[in-house]
Amino acid sequence: MKSLRIKNDAVELAVREYSAPGGPSAPTLILVHGYPDEQGVWQPVARLLAERFRVVTYDVRGAGGSTRPRRTADYAMERLTADLRAVLDAVSPDRPVHLVGHDWGSVQLWGALTGGGVEGRVASFTSVSGPCIEHFGQWARDRLRRPAPRDAAQLAGQFARSWYLLLGAVPGVSWVFWRCGGTRLFPAAVRLLEGVRRRPAPTLRADALHGVRLYRANAARFLRPARDRVTDVPVQVVVPTRDAFVSPHPSASLAPYAARLWRREIRAGHWGALLRNPDVLAGQVTEFVRYVEGGAESPDLRAARLTAERTA
Image (cartoon, rainbow, N blue to C red):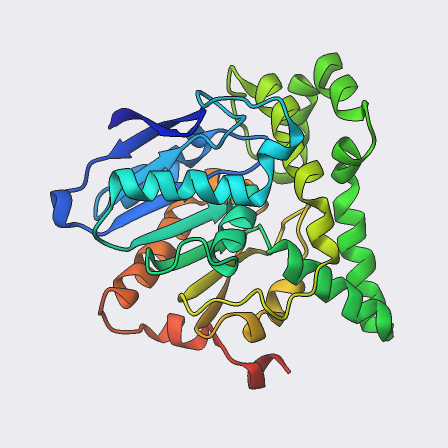
């Protein structure tokens, strides 16, 4: 593993590259972390993937060893996409990469793919526990317009999972939480909810206090229509069935937004997919990347393919 610094205007991104047996000829995978994590959360999965691929991770702006802008506007989706482009230009300027995102890492990769910022640069995308904001907003509005019992139950389930948004929505709440014991409570809550023991990163408090601007800078996107947020990049959605923060239901309604879409489940929680079952997630990513690179579609992958007819 080697460390790099990649610059995008005034922001410097801390990057790690895991070498692959195939060297530069191996497909490149870029793994993007969520909130309030830094790139170290990917290490168990990255080490497994690096047995076959060239793997790159980076601290998003505001996290880990990367620059921490102070203005909320600096965390808007367009800035995050520009950071991704800078990483693409530095690590794989001539060959499309395979993207894998978790939580807010997945949210911002959806934004880049459907926002027209990385055309021709991406071979595939695996999304874990992080929906496109516009897709999620449309899913919620559709169910509010025709509140059948099942729709109401799905909405209630997701809203119950979204309690943590208060940390970003109410001014001052995140500051109080993270400065008054949140760095101890957060790992304890993950352990209680998912049975996952994790050592907090030394930068956790700063990552959380700066990263909460992601929610504030992009909240208005929830109200935008989703009809134009589409991609022709092959997308694999991995759904942890025990996720305490993201409902599995919105991911079943994504066929209109991705021309080639696969949906697979994993028996794990939000962070458990990365930390407790890294071999399962790495296997699903490997299978998908090999198929996109020209390999055969396995029976499991074929069964996971979604179409508009199957999700109607």
